[in-house]
Image: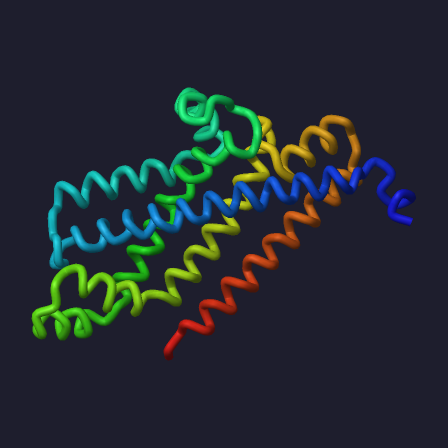
Length: 222
């Protein structure tokens, strides 16, 4: 039945490409979460009136985040080809797509982290300061716990964006479902391959969204 509906689809290739997409998204997710939290914390803490208020540092970090977020992902892929080849050794395959995915997604998530931290009631922070809490205590006992639902929601949105990035990485041989849809579907005029790859990408997105919504609901104390 499936052979009649999708004569050009090789299901073993679909499975392998799906695993490649999950691999790229998973590794990038971990790195983006860590870097995004660090950048977002620095943006917030060095902002005016906050714990580590420092305008020059805040301006530099803010400029980096804004510039990087503004570069279209396909162009970013091309721009950092020398860097990718230097650290990975190749510009083809799932691993070669990781640097661009992380560089593209971390600043995006950093802004979401900063916004989440800004939404915390300043009274809670001031109360912790009045009790003599150190900066590290405020960060790990107040800021991050209070913003957890927003941080999870933000990383969910970022992960879905990264799945889209992995599909775009397929145009330059990044691997995964994007490469399959482009090379074996579009270039060979196999519409069924493109369709199946697209549906699988959508299923992955739906699963990520469901997990993110579930975790956000569970951590929301309101």
